[in-house]
Amino acid sequence: MRLDTLLEGSPAYGVLDTKDGVLLFRRSGFEQEFTELAAEAVEALGDQCEMIPLTNAEDDCDRLFVAPLNEDRSFNPSR
Image (cartoon, rainbow, N blue to C red):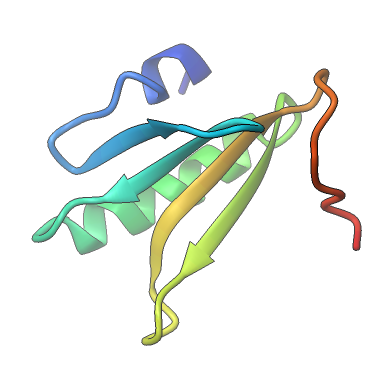
């Protein structure tokens, strides 16, 4: 898995630019595919980026925040 490929999006998820990185969001009907993709991305790219899985009310991963490690951020992920 490559970061640039991940950030292209797919039918299973979209990509939004944010202040400190990008947000991958799951599209309806692709719940399992997105969950698997998010887990794979965290495992494969966790040393290149800060990867923060976000869940919905059902404790289901429906978003993944990706922030480059080498840039200043407006948030502190260690809090």
